[in-house]
Length: 511
Image 1 (cartoon, rainbow, N blue to C red):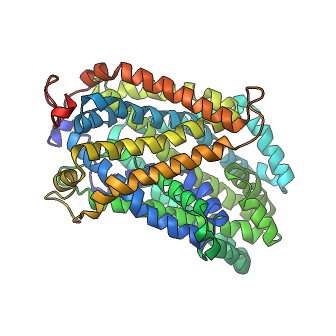
Image 2 (cartoon, one colour):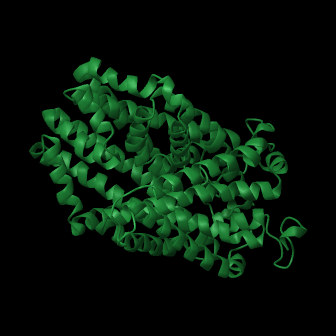
């Protein structure tokens, strides 16, 4: 399909595509989750696994997604239909639903970052100069659903507006937001070393120096894998979606490497900035460790907020920059989720200007329960965050279904490739990736099952309730998708790989 046949929705350059893909990958998890995970799991020991899995999970999957999107020129539903066979259309439906379900509560999180940018910028942060005060500030905010919803709506509106203007709007926004985000993080990185280079360097020790005993702990490797998987958005459908607008002569393999390495680079900058700030502004190393171990929201909205407040006017300024950085990171990720959903509806005949409005309203409305209840948000984060791992498995499945070696030769190592990808990629997709998935998925369920605490169902621990909730929600969604599989497969437009409805797409086994 020529670029003109796509209605002009083509990225203007490799830079535009890669920045959009990195923007989709870079989110709040790079800024608040990565530093905590690294520091809590052996620092440099964690980093070894994190870098290893970039090449054993993230980049191989990104290659597959870019190649699928570029070849089929369709969103996740049509792409998996044409690549895997009509009976597997539901897998593409799963990918778009999970990506959108994550957007429901992710918009709420972005709203938090907008609120705290205003807390710092307006000077409200000055009234909260210790963790008790910032915890009260956080509880007052999170306990006021109307205020949380207001900021959630601001977040959704901003993301929907970007997507409304199509690929050009997404490309332009990422060209502005991503460099600005990195610049802000670098500024935040320099700040703690200006205050107290010795104490800030303590943060670097927790981030980069390996603790050998952690190399022997399975949890270190599992945490490193999950951070790499979620952080790069590999297997989430974003790369498939953006590759629909990839230029014909665009490379797949190098773009995947640039996306993965670019995302990890932002994580490293954020890790130094956050841990440097925590230790530079903490009274003791023990206080710094307590902040790091307090959880994502606790680290960001309670401990870091208190630390920024104690630094006076410059602390307010750096705090405002930090939370604005988080808002930008969340925005670029939320944009990609709305685009994933919109692209699939466009494949079914909807006009962009119309469907983006509906998707934006749906994301805002469906996010209201998460805005009103932190417990509901945590539940949905586990249910659909875990579902994203399954999305990655589906990408690997259709590649294996097609034939990993044939896929690589036809769609990755094409005439416009900048890098030649060898048989190692086939081995990872066919054997390593499924094994990684089984280990991580099983560990999540086991860890959650053993979690104690009250749940909405009396007599049932919160961990068991969450697993039960996951099974019910997944079961309902998959049942509906299987029921409508054939209808949706017919409603999605044809792409370059599509064939007649009564013919097999790949081989006789798919009839």
